[in-house]
Length: 485
Image 1 (cartoon, rainbow, N blue to C red):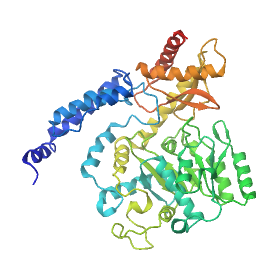
Image 2 (image 1 turned 120 degrees about the horizontal axis):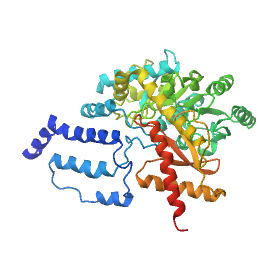
Image 3 (image 1 turned 90 degrees about the vertical axis):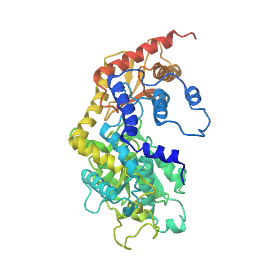
Image 4 (image 1 turned 45 degrees about the vertical axis):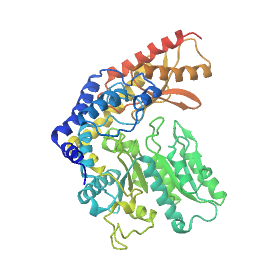
């Protein structure tokens, strides 16, 4: 028997009043950040934040109101506020509010969508969402897929399917002979090398193709094919990228797909960031040729602006995903052998899996495909506006023209010309600017140079905020130059 006071606490926490404690602090967070109030990120460092939560495990429970008050005061108070219009950092969204509220429904039901009988409505919703995504990609009736935790899991699953196609016995017997080769661009996501290591291929068997304008060089890809063939090796898959992490640029999927088709090589498209351009009449052309892919990674939690986590993998032929997992589990999966299983777990890694497809469904129901497309266009237009503003200033220089919502640029203070000093100054400027609370940006290295990088992920951000970003960086830069040597 549970103690009476514990039973009473659980019953009380199911009430509308208890839920309102949580929704109220989220609503206040939305209100404050929508106005741009307060810092984007507090100045307290990691040590200070750790000290805030450095207390003993509670022996006894506390009033829920006190717990929620601490969440608002200490947890939200010390967090990065992605919904602030001056947040222009990593590829993590300021999530759409309707999808945020949906999280409570998903958690309350707690259905596991890997097995249909455990989540009948969740399975139906996921199947419909995947169907919509396949249709946008131009895949036919035999296509399908599954929601994933993100792009890394989706890409790993796709390469597992590619391995099953080239080495059908590998699941049972392992790989024999020289490992097959995975080909990707030099700026591709680290998920590809990680998958090669996890699949037992070895990262030495990932061939990097040089880039032109930060996208895969198609002529160099063709030469790589010839070189691998001359070595007597096999290509397991080519991974092209639609929306590179560093620059947001798109590989030429049409040309790459044609080469892969001529040589009967599996093409996987990492569209984690850029596949959502399919919603945009303005930007969908960047994905021309995506229908040639065997598999596509797509993260709704990026440019569809959904809360983490909501990734997806779609396949031109869903049977490729089923072949990737050559296992039987009759205590869970009950589909007849040789027929399509209604259980999503037969096509994906995870068994205990939330119904994250409901967030995608709600976002599309609430805002429509045209609304998602308009959001994509708006975020890309902000990067274009930043590029234009930089061209009008002598103290900054862009590294590329934006093809999406990402732009890399450099601070070039007057009188400083040597590259090592510029690298150090750009690194310090990013640190100083973020610590100031004015805004939040990221940094990377392009062509051996340290650069500043922004990703527009918040629909509340406007061109005025973009101008404020450059002015804020310039002001922090002046302070940096004034520091004693």
